[in-house]
Amino acid sequence: STNYILTEMTKRNIDFESALQKAKEFGFAESNPKLDIEGLDARDKIKIIAFHAFGKNINNRDIHVKGIDSITKYDLFFAKEKEYVIKLIATCRLNTKSNIQEISVFPTFIPKYHPLRLTNNEYNGILIGGELIGNQSLYGKGAGAYPTASAVLSDIAGFSNKYFYKYPKIKSGDVIIDSVKKKFYLGYNKKYRLNFFEYGEILESYESSIFCYTIIYGFLDKIIQLKKHNEISIISFT
Image (tube, rainbow, N blue to C red; front, side):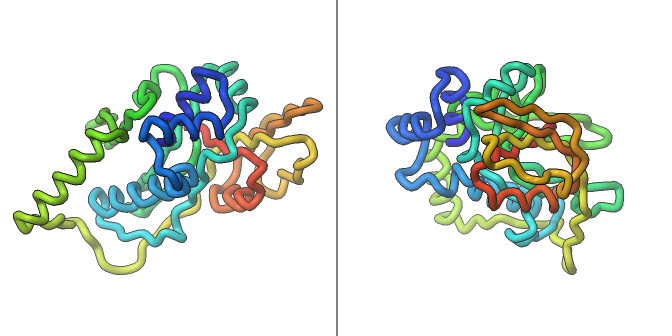
């Protein structure tokens, strides 16, 4: 759903509300799209992936989440100028100590030639990385009548045949999530300007009469505090 909305905003130069309405009309968004546009559906999916891949059961409160409902045409102008596209990306990484280095959901600038750049409209993509295998990607439709029906029928068939998911990697004990620094873009109207020095190192700033942005490098758990200001776009860099 979010991918379709962002693709429409980018290709047709329309605002978020118009793109959301079109997604509803074509069946790519629910009548109440909160779970999708606020990143909550992506949060639940990355939580399941972390459980399968790493055996770690992570609390929702420990997953940093920012949806796409604050994205504006000015953010898209910036992306186009820098040859990026914006995608809602759910991320989970381990560090060398096998601790969670990051688990988050953020709108993200995707550069040219990145494997996830071509996941437009109702398509989804997964990028899997490892020390020995490098990066591998999966790509396919993730929204619409037939993909949704296929997933529902698969679950019904599994339940009917008493098939249940197994989690052979599950580990007991507390999940350790290390603090990580990342680079973020903050887009905002001039009247909402804040003291961003409190949140990290300022790398770049721009100001005009109608739009401003700041690029900041700081700890993820600090920058997510800006989420309470819904007028500020928070977009991660890959």
